Amino acid sequence: MIIGYARVSTTDKDTALQIDTLNAAGCERIYQEPRSGASKERPELTR
Image (cartoon, rainbow, N blue to C red):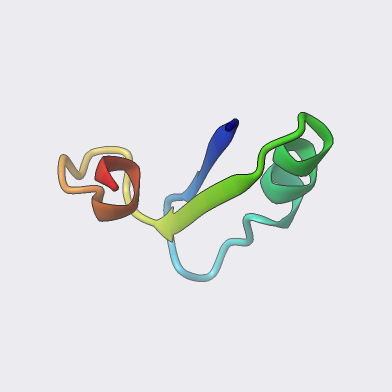
């Protein structure tokens, strides 16, 4: 299974382009979250 992860740095940004790219790459499961790159806590990435 191919798993993808999309992240944006703020809630007012959109992951749509990342999601499209991950789907095109064949990802069967995509986790996404708005989280700053400086934040070490990324629950969806951990999942």
